[in-house]
Each structure stands twice: as C-alpha cells, then as structure tokens.
Length: 326
Image 1 (tube, rainbow, N blue to C red):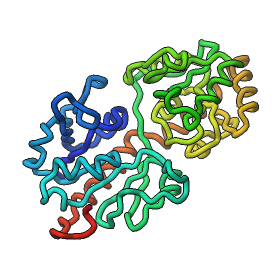
Image 2 (spheres, rainbow, N blue to C red):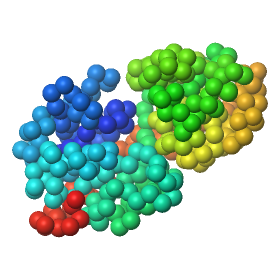
Image 3 (cartoon, rainbow, N blue to C red):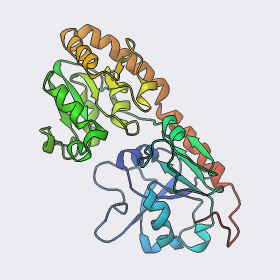
C-alpha cells in the first residue's frame, strides 16, 4: 500500500515527533514568523524525511488523503483558513490531547461531526468528554528512548517534569509540588521551570538521559492528560510516584511499578523510602519499564495510527453542503 499524504499542525512537538514514525508523508503548514501551530518542523528534533513543511497559502494545492487537526483552533478556525472546499469535504481525524476543562463530565466536544474520527490519547479523556455523535477511538501514547539509556538512580533526588508549572497552578499541582519540595529533595524541569525555582527546560531528545540519574519520577498533577515524559521515564526504568488521578491511576501499580495515592502525605512517605532504599527503587523501576514496554510501545502506537489513517483516508468524500463538516 502506498504511503498516505497527511496534513497536520505542529501543536505538541513531542507528540508530533512520535507521530512522524508512521510510514506516511506528513505536511506541516508554516506562516511567516512561525506563529503557534505554524512553526513547521521546529528545531527541537532531527525530523525524518517524511515530514515536510508547506506554506500555509499553498496547502489548498496539495493532494491530501487525510487531515489531522490537533487543537480546537485547528478544527474551528485553521482548517477553514487553509483548506480548499474539496479538502474540507475529506473525512478528518481530530486528536484530543486533554481532558475537558469547563466541566469534567458535561463538556460537549467542539468536534461535532459523525463523518470525523475523534482520537483520544487516553481512555480517561474518552470517558470524560461528551463526544456526542462523533465516533471516537483511543490511541494510547507510544514512546521511544535513545538506545542504551537506562535507569541509574544515583542521585538521591526525585525529578518532576511539568511545563509552565507556576503558570498552570493547582490543576498541574503547583501547590503539591511546593509542599513536597519542602520535605524531600526534588528538581523541576520543563518550560518556564525557573519561575518555580526549577532547573529550566531540557531539550526533548536529552530528557530521558537526564532523568535516568534520579531516584524516582514524581508526578504532582491533579488533572491533565497522561504526559509523555512519564511514559518515557517508565520506559527507561524510573519508578513513578504520582497522584492517583486521571489516566495515571491505571498506569502505576502500587508496589510493582511505583506508588500512587490521593493522600500526599503517604506519597511523601513513599518518596522518603525510595531515597533510603536504592535497591527497592530499582526493583520498582524494573516493574515500570515492563509496563511501559508493553503498554507504550512505539510499534503499537504506529500500528494503531496506521490503521486509523488508512481507514479514514479510504472513506468517500463528504458531499458538498453536508451539515457535518463544520
């Protein structure tokens, strides 16, 4: 089967990097000044040859098999600005990266189209969104770490990876992090981490190697999607200590791959125990790695996406004037 020609936007760079592992050509629209969503390939990764930049005003001239939107703005605004009427009638995929914000249980998803496919990245997100008449599918994360990068755990500290923690506040657990940091040694990395007394951003290709030296990975987040950094940490063998919320409650098994709880006091006890017992931390890290290799395999991720893309691309174009494509 021939490679498909896919248009998508650069919304989450790490996710796009993993998506680029599919055996298809991916086209990224760019605009002068490279505003959000139109940054093209960017500088964080060495992109494979199947990822191409195209001027936004030339998108309508592309022969596309499928359009993949990755933000609400992509769906509501951007696709109408850059696609031709014929391209808009192609069945589309929307990737929902987050759980609903307005109400955890009663928020209608902005994609309201029975001809589209709504892909959720976790089962929790699929459960919580009111997806209405739009068919949904869950494609869980798949990650790949550099060859030879494995847990060493020699630092008697925990590592926290959250972008913009201070700016995003309680939802991402800024207060939980501050309480924990006052009682156990923790380092914070991510975009704008310096604002919360952290170390700053680690380039994504270097993050796995950077995390490997820490004793455990701490995830203080109350309510967001499952972070790729957590999947990567587990893949290299870091034990995870986390709030038992959202999809994380299904990822970590207590005493096997780490510890989860809604009681931050008990989590602090677990962190202290891991700092005092490197052998136990390594044992839990091995359990985390086994879980990650089975659940977050890049091969499974690519196979799931290949199936979804080929299924949607094989559908007939929506007739002109159809009410669903809006």
